[in-house]
Image (cartoon, rainbow, N blue to C red; front, top):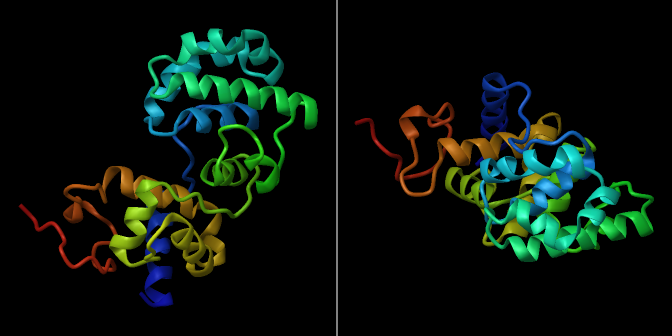
Length: 212
């Protein structure tokens, strides 16, 4: 895909949704970090249902440590892998208090040193909480990048690096959200909704879903 076509794609995505953001609910960088940590292999909707119950009372590292692993588990047991996530979340809270004064660090290295926080989670937090032009590649972005031809790659890191290289600078801040929403609702895995897609004529996917 050439640069002009990529630019046209992001121009359209921006025109359709000028101010995209995460569908996870949060009030602070810390709450976003915990929500993203909980969202692995789970839907944003299921995470929001759980966090609405405990963020108002336990929405800080100190309060969450006091709640404890078992207490947190009770709130998040409707989410997949909840025991591991509860363990990692409480351990992360302790490290934030011990090493970062209770604040969420603003570097990928420091974030990835926290239990349960991988590169994707770190990139989401850096982008959404701190406005850094990072690219968090999940299954939706990986699929969209390969299927459309925007940034094809054999693995997540290759796609991430290509997106960072190829997405025009002025669209980089919001590109992650546009691509996730496109993959979540239009460019879905089994049968993409090509007739409803605003970039279908720019997309290089050879097996587009025809009009019914």
